[in-house]
Image 1 (spheres, rainbow, N blue to C red):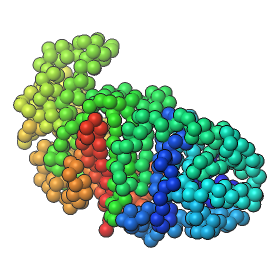
Image 2 (image 1 turned 90 degrees about the horizontal axis):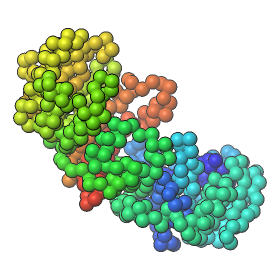
Image 3 (image 1 turned 90 degrees about the vertical axis):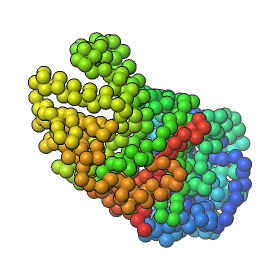
Image 4 (image 1 turned 180 degrees about the horizontal axis):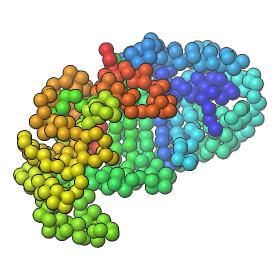
Length: 521
């Protein structure tokens, strides 16, 4: 298994730099026209490619983000310093500036070939070298001087070493210094360099070509491959929702590009959706009408169409043993509820969450609707439930009409279903749900300074999801148990985030999205 701290300490330095994308600030140019993906096995599930030598604005932005989040002025120098100190503590020595910097190239790649017991396999790490001979000499020197022994091997004319405490394989393949999880993995990288590889696959090239320029790192994921190797363990309802949105997850790939800014981190996403048509629709106006106190909110377009497809599938399957196949719609029609008419009248939907702890937690889903079909159906359903004497059902009247359901299992607040002003709201808590119908006394999200900043950060991309930094983290802190140590270790850094903003839209046959974490100034 590859560890970030193998016996040859310089490989620890390089591996972390490859992952963090924060090497020297000196200018560098790639000595090869092909990337490290040509060393990755064909069909690899996840691949990350990073810039080890950011310059100019990119370098400044990387350091700005590091300073805002962790108080570090120069991230590259900090990482190198920490790893040199770590190597010294292990009884080894590495002088990055004199021993590594002269031959270190600009690009690095990390590939994960498959899933093993639900987790990604050991990575293959490839780091560009501008002087293969000097790199090999350095590896030889460190291997012979280390406390762990290595054996010399050769394959297809490529010399490499295997050993150390983890049995890693290290060598130079063409213009790449390669770290692999043993002899077999290194030989596979040699085979890929001269034959079939991830970099040579059309679907990879098409996906990676969509990566944004100006990034510090690009991440490729074979979504379909991950699902297949995980045993198709995707929730059927999630699968149905994705497909109704024009996404075939079994064929989809995705690429994420990480672009640091002076006071934000941007992640540009694109997916080919398995060849399906990209969804479209601007839901920013609807999202902006959610309550200003929302700690999180998101919106989706075409909800009615998605619901119609879900209803058709549910009607076909039935709800055994109570409702046989192809009887759901007809049974409800007899009760005066026409599911097809209701779905046809629905348009877009939004969901918002409020509260600072479990006791104050509330929120609702809000759906825009045309005509009176949906509102009449809600009134009819409430009458039907009360007529059947379902426990806890109460009529809601006044500014909005509908019903609520209260029970001990639901906690201190009722589930509320109401309609008014061309909207339907289904939520937890009466006051919280009514806010979704614009009947509450509080202001809307669009009046919030942080929300305005989130909208502005996305530029021309319409916003579709928003998380308030302090409010969202405060709620998470109240709900996440202390046993989740990874979360609590990240809390000091998450406190630096002012907001999260997500915008989405189609681009030719691709679905594109932009996620921005705005940092406190």
